[in-house]
Length: 166
Image (tube, rainbow, N blue to C red):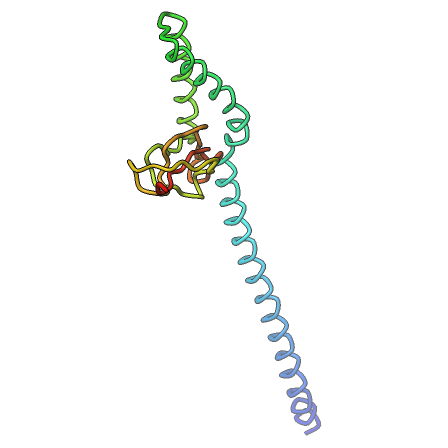
């Protein structure tokens, strides 16, 4: 009989110990699952950030090269203004075209501004000019071309915007 008492006396202790171990196991399992989910989220975030960096990686160097492109365009405009033609002008135009092609391959594209409605996200208004020929708030002159880097403005177009005539 003493054996039966001894067995029944320890059974509640064993059950309680098993419950504690099960609760502890559940805590560790929950911790492991949370850690795994955090790691998966971390991997996704790092992947998105890496993709963003790659997408816009050419932007900083392109921004430094744009003044060179501007000077090529100014040279061509000056030559056209004086009516100059010839192999030198053709060469400069060819270099400008190659330059624009390289930029385009890397996601850098010019902003079309001439004749477009003024958009403060794409254009920087330097002046206003009264005009009866076009609607108010229309770009009537592009002073300096703007460029996009994928879907971001790399440099806004510097423009003259029309106003209603007085």
